[in-house]
Length: 315
Image (cartoon, rainbow, N blue to C red):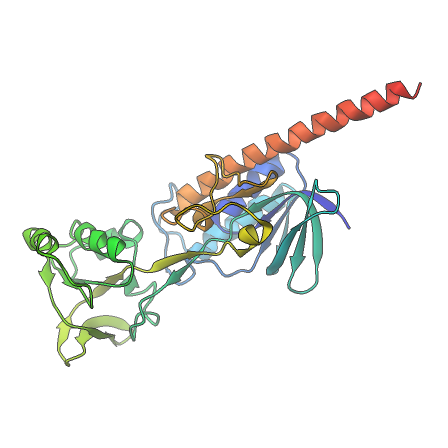
């Protein structure tokens, strides 16, 4: 079984960015990815310098080509388990098809899951007419009739309602079981955000596009775009299963370079940073890769010194 210098689990912006840095550093690198990126439903990506308007698929294809051009390897599999090696100085990656891979280091960039509100039409329109990130899509839907739906992620949703107002003067907030206090109501109203009370029954679509919000009592409010506040759940089972420390917020803790509590294991992107945009995830992957390479370098130096000592000692 070949031992890689680094296995990167997750092949989106963070993982591919890290892989590019490491392959250019002449490390043996394997990227393992399921081929199911979080942003797959989106038609275009934005806010990524020089790649604005590109499709998510095109960005990832370009990234994979770069990694392969520098000698990296890419495997489309799902990782089922991550464990320490028998020498305690390596890790063993088990894929769900039985493939087993040994590596000196690991970088986990498996992202997160958007737990969407349980409202009819939300999932069907996700990434099309139902959005969550105004920095990703706000400019494209500016000056349209926008709905913001209240949900379980109350702090996010309340902030989102005020933030969306920056892109449109026609914003309606549907608390949807969130009970607003007087201060919250005053602040929304002061910004010209209309409040429509009542439980939301569904997001209405016509000809494949959002056309309104239907309330439980049958009222339909005409809207063109809907913003929701998902709950963010990290895909961190590989990290927690290995024993990485989890913080009070329930997320795996990392140092500024993405290092976890386990030497030799890094994490980057949405798996440890829910607000990370594509460009910041790519930057985190690059930063983690440099720290990872320095870790490998220290091992290489120590081994070289040990081998020299043994060689001279045997004379």
